[in-house]
Image 1: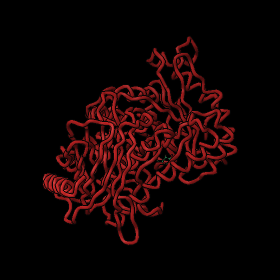
Image 2: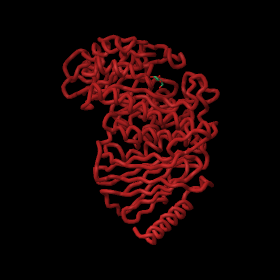
Image 3: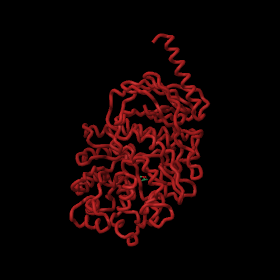
Image 4: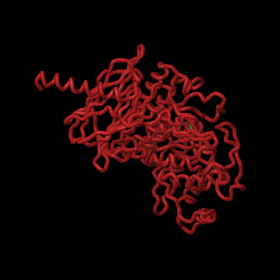
Length: 524
Ligand code: AHR
């Protein structure tokens, strides 16, 4: 390019950027900086497994009771006891699977207590989560009904810690057998003629901790034994997920892959983001300063290192990448909201959580060759939830909106990108300011999602488009003036996506004026 052409190009880009910025909410007073991105649409990568957008619903606090299940006689509108407002909101997300009934609860759950007439179901104490009495009114049939109502697949977590091989074996028969057999007939007696499809099953949860405090060598054998009796009945093939490591326990992954890698389809990984990394004082969900914002994002980006390291171990035993990494618990974990039951893990959800969601989903997509699925914890009223409820009131969270905006990536082909980003610097620390992911859907549309972690600076992202002829660009942005902006029952739309006018196309160059602390999804 000649000098005059370069100057003219730069002038056009800067003018477009300035014009675009003025059209968006004023979130920054600091001078903009630039990032560059090359989108290699001509070199498609692996398909993004929709399971990366999985969710998790545990018998914990008000996730199930109050959040999903209100009972048939509730004044809250419901279908067969399942609240209609929550179902309507969740349907919009195209959720691929829901993991249930735990978590730690799964290893004390006995499925036979949750079938048959509700008034006759035995009660139990939920010893892990608040010591409350569980009346088992939400059991197998209710969960399967919920899955059908929101249009998702069940991901059932079986009890290894306090259950038995027989119990798990019979649950699978009850759920999936179409034979004239005792368990299938018991299911029929309880109102369900046709077997359900259960294509995902976890064999225990956190067996190194609440699931039995086992050593990896011992659990590897336990997994092999239980897994032997999880049968595939005609028409139902189960993807078996072995309980994996927590965070950076690489030895667990190593031992499991060495001793049971051949028997499993997937191996799980759990990693939670705590602003302080101190389980005794994690930090508030809403009352935080920029240092806590920065620390949260820095700690969440560790997911990339963890997935890389666990995947490298898996590569040693499984170079063909047959075994999927299933990050079936992830998300932000803060101190509970003041005045709420500490065992219920109820926390608000702000723009910070939306940024965390965007970053993690990009990480999973980047590792689409190994990551089979992921389940954010949790769906309603617990940890980094999609939805908050209070009696009949309901609001969706900023995290919900990221899942709604990103659903275009589900099942699409990932497209490689080369990103050069400035850093977001705070004190001595720095993290990349921009994170991005791209994909092409089956209709040929290219989607580019972008996250700006910097709460102070807008960023001009200049994207070179290779292998795609883009005629138009549209998009949506999720941002707010305050870092801790969140939705409440009185102001449920304080944080929600709006049309994005900050992207311009000129030949094969896309210029994006990425507002400070924002998530943007563009369609080309
Ligand atoms: O999601 C909350 C809890 O975190 C789960 O029950 C457990 O598996 C994990 O430790």
